[in-house]
Amino acid sequence: MVRIKFNGIITSVTGNTVTILPNLEKLTDDEISKEGDSSALWRTDEKYFKAVALDRTGESDDARNTKYKAFAIPIKRVLSILKCNFYRIIYKR
Image 1: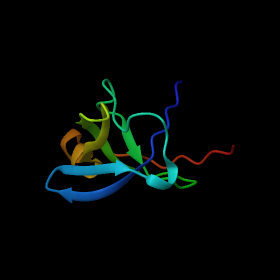
Image 2: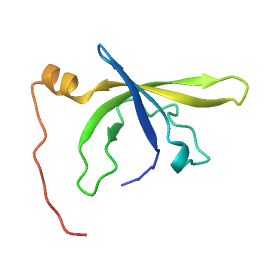
Image 3: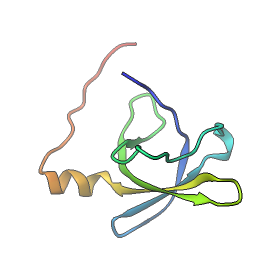
C-alpha cells in the first residue's frame, strides 16, 4: 500500500464540485492534486477519518507550475450513484 499525504482545506461546495486549497498550516513540497490522483479519496484529518470527496482534477498555477487547487466530487453523491456505502471499521494502531 502506498500512502500519500496531501493537506487541503475545503473552501466551497457548489453543486457536484468540492473546491480544495492547500492548508497553509500544513504545507508540503508537493502538488495538492497530481496527474493520476483522480478518484483518490479526500478525508478528514481526524483519528477516525470520514470520507469527504473523490478527487477529480487539479488546477495549475502557471507562474509556479504547481497544482494549487483541487476539485472533487462530494462522497455522498458518488456513493448515491454507485448505490453503495462505507461501513465503519475500527482498528487499533
